[in-house]
Image (cartoon, rainbow over all chains, first blue to last red):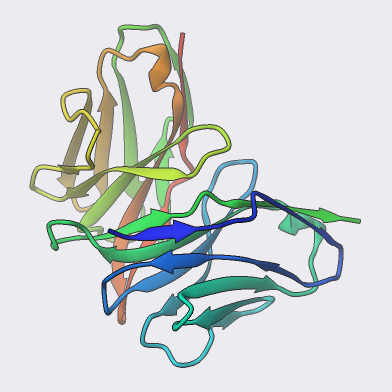
Length: 118
Length: 117
């Protein structure tokens, strides 16, 4: 079974500063993928960044970077130069095979509500 | 590219009625679609995985007779909530899977907010 843990229910950050959102995971799969999604109050899920388990370099996408520490099973999201529009719910997710082994499925963490203060 | 739509975006119905939600991949063919449920201030919980032309695979604890899923084509999956009750009120989100390079990527629809009176 796969498990994603996000221990920060809420985080606050000042505009223009950097913030790290924590995510740890547990899986017995050798091959897996880790995702971060942003969910604003409108409800849509916005894909931010992806890290494959065999990727040796940390993923980066603009102001988003993923601090992947495989031995510690952590995949923290770093947002640099925070903007007011970054205020939203952030979910960490893991992609792995379902119990039948025929489909990939995503398992989500409980999420972290980020508030960016002006 | 990779746009997924859902219809309706919001629905209010009376207890005991059935509600159908459509999920469409607009610019790609999706062999697999997923249905999630999200209660307020909670995470997304996978309800079922739907493959075109075959029966959906339901997660443990999800009643297949209550949440009917039909994946009629590579671009359309529907979720029907039968005999809805107030406890079925929730935010339902679908996603469609597309294999891109080495990544099996999921693209999410905008969600459907169901309120059962």
